[in-house]
Length: 70
Image 1 (tube, helix red, strand yellow):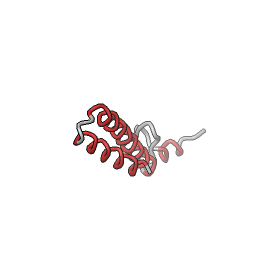
Image 2 (cartoon, helix red, strand yellow; image 1 turned 180 degrees about the vertical axis):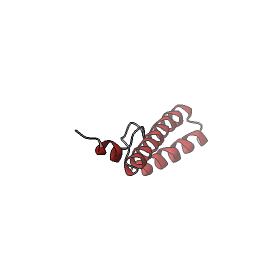
Image 3 (cartoon, rainbow, N blue to C red; image 1 turned 180 degrees about the horizontal axis):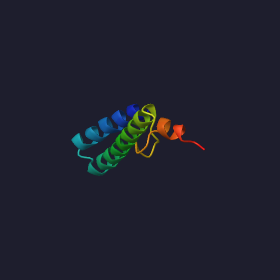
Image 4 (cartoon, one colour; image 1 turned 90 degrees about the vertical axis):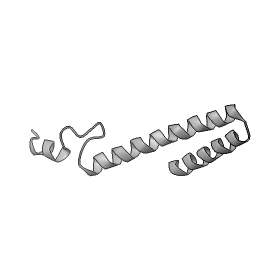
C-alpha cells in the first residue's frame, strides 16, 4: 500500500512540475519522499527482526540474550 501511494504521489508531482504548478508539485514531492522514508524504515525493521535483532538495531541478537535469562 505504501509503495502504491509513493508511486502515485511521485507521478502526480512530476505531472505538476511539467504543468508549471511548482507549489503543488513541491508538496506532492515532499509527501512522496516521506513515504519513501517510511518504506526504507519498514524494510530495515523487517530485516532486523528476521535476523533475530531488536527493532532499534542489531547490538546483541535476541537468541543470544535468551541464553542468559534469569
